[in-house]
Length: 329
Image (tube, rainbow, N blue to C red; front, side):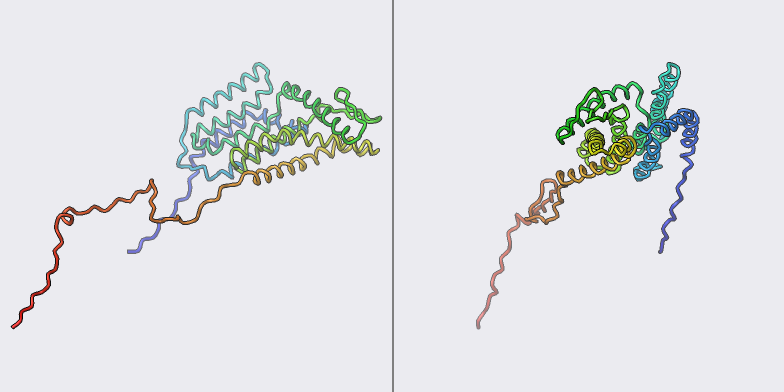
């Protein structure tokens, strides 16, 4: 009897219709907030990477599509609690005029929708993409101001020290570097905060895409700080060298325009070297494919039962053959 295999049924995406409708309603409710975010991405160079964050989140969802199974999607009421918390955060931000919390509330609302309609199975699939959306939100004004001051001081002191080691007559005065008759002002835009924010997002994306060991991921994520600061240091020192060689116009153009484009590939190169160094330091243990030295030796985990002896065979004596009798006439 010949049997034909059953034809595979086409996937039904109708269970995702309520989630799509709720997502459209959430986008409509946050439309003004998202419009203000887009305006910030266009006007503030420090957050120009915000356009790439939603696209990269969608890419993360695509790369993790094997972890999503429609049969395991079950609603979870904890998602309703998370969605309510996000909406309350937005209402509080509007009522008390905490503008910084308004875009932040969008992330828990998205996580609440995923958990509400898909349950923990969908959350395990989507949590990296949802968490990565936080990088499209500008830092609160007080946080950015509090970080800019120490970063300006650090950039001024370290770059002045490096110039002095190179033999340049550099002197730090406040947030200004005096180099001969030139004054290099380390303003807030040159503090390295922009590079720090962008590179934190970039390092996190690299960790999520490569899916390396948690030790490698932690090192790559934490190294965003020294790599960003070193890139900004190279930018300032290169500007001082140009001023010392009499290339004032080129130095001013490089310091304000060109360096912003050059420093990112430089930081990516340092990140690539770091990954190669981690590959050289941490080696994966090779699998032992050799046959066992004693194949008759049994392991403790796999025991083979012994054949039992029959009691009859042990008690019954073995009959001995007697020689045949011969008669002679």
